[in-house]
Length: 131
Image 1 (cartoon, one colour):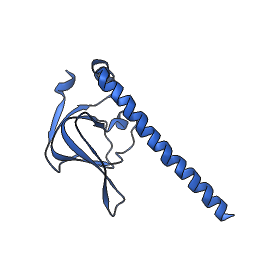
Image 2: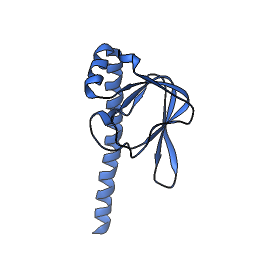
Image 3: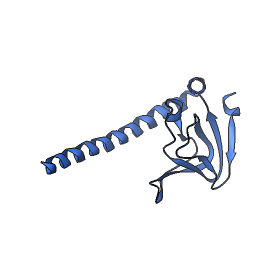
Image 4: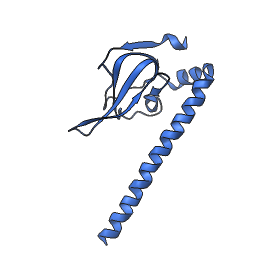
């Protein structure tokens, strides 16, 4: 039941568009995708994800707009999950993926913490300069 929910994309096709509000997480079964961020002027590829990787998971937990655009890099075969309930049953059937997901989310969180700590010291420096 879990793996039947799949989609195919061709090279250059948009899988997720920044700014859209939708609930859907993807798991890459075959191929790879580029994660793109834009500041309105230029677009940069912040990551390329491959087989076994996942993206879009935050949308299952909050209603905020998509932060990045995700584009197929060549032909891509994806599984998708549309709710927290589906995610839960998927993880119960796929414990190895569940372990991997915890590991990757922890690493992403650590990375975010580093960025936030950098911002805090930046703000502190600016406050010192402003005195």
